[in-house]
Length: 176
Image 1: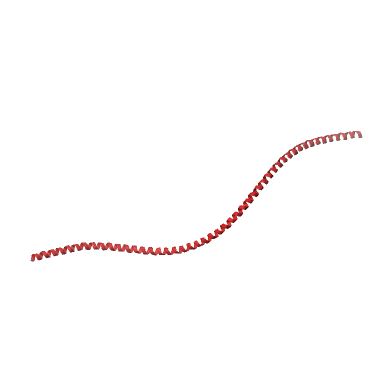
Image 2: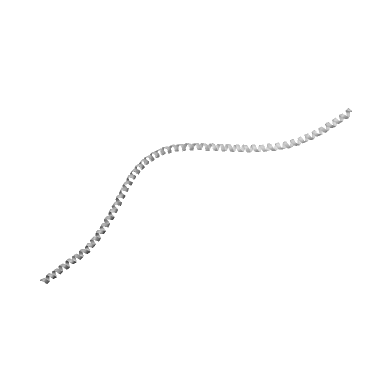
């Protein structure tokens, strides 16, 4: 029985050692998992901090966008008012355009009349120019005739002086 006890004790001791050996390996695995889990926890805490920061920043942006939305609504109302004013102004402009179109047509008609008058005046001027050229030619002809007549008069005056001189000489001869 002693052998059996020894054998049984050895078996229990082997079992205890085997269990203790498994526990050490398992303990190492658990410590490794614990370290990994702690790292993941720290990473998650960091991510949570970032998310909280992002959330705060997003909340701030939402507040800013709310103000921006209010500004856009105000601008939209202003644009609607301006649109209504522009529509009224557009109607006024269309009326002015219609008036200006009528005035332009009247001016075009008057321009055609003036063009016709200018054509008539041009024709009259051309006819007057032709008449003036004819008159100039007649004046030139008359001027040359006048020049020749004046030359004749000068010649005759020269002859008259000669005759008067001859008469004066003859009178001197007879009075002597």
